[in-house]
Length: 117
Ligand code: SF4
Image (cartoon, rainbow, N blue to C red; front, side, top):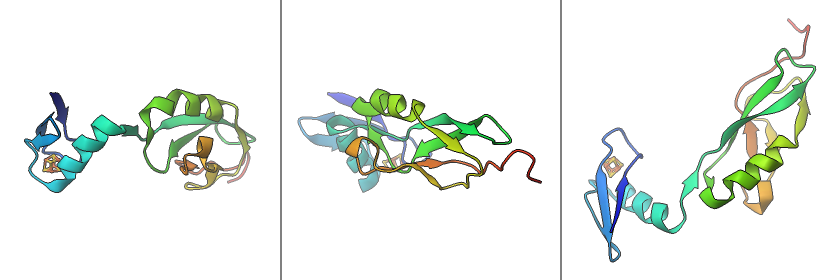
């Protein structure tokens, strides 16, 4: 039996999955989350990349969607090779289709060029 806490809303239902049967969820989203969490768990990846000529040295970035949990370390390794140039706007694509997943890595905030007011 798998026990999962649903994170799709603040209620945090305690879900049990046994022999393909899902119990403890209040809504369909919980069932989908629990099944996905067992078959293909995903996580939103958040990290930073170096930024040249920016008002700060690091740019926070994140995956646009969940990435398979088993390739998160490889994604971090890919992201660590990247250095971008300021200015950057929130939502700018920093890495397109990381590792062929179809998921883009995007900037989480604006970073202006050094000296730009
Ligand atoms: S199962 Fe539905 S109600 Fe329960 S935590 Fe998940 S989303 Fe919220």
